Length: 84
Image (cartoon, rainbow, N blue to C red; front, top):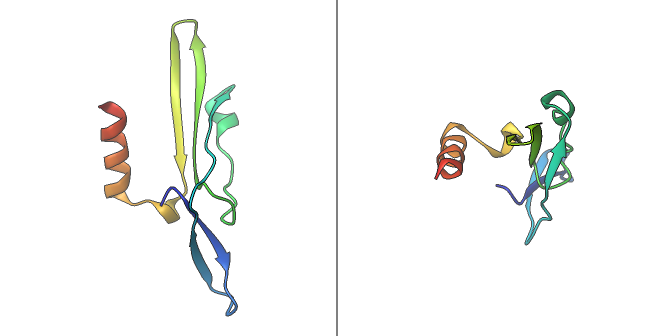
């Protein structure tokens, strides 16, 4: 799902496209408010992550994933793997 985007098919319905590879980078954000923005379903990845510097010794990891590529199980798996 992290390599997925969606295009409009010939019948006007959304069609899933799975890419061989998708560029990804960990961004820096000024705040959580600056991090949150809409996704473009035609552009993979539909997942983003950023660090917010709270102090010289403390950072916040923010992640955002469009609900079209995730569910409760996948989000819980991601949270568990981040913790590990």
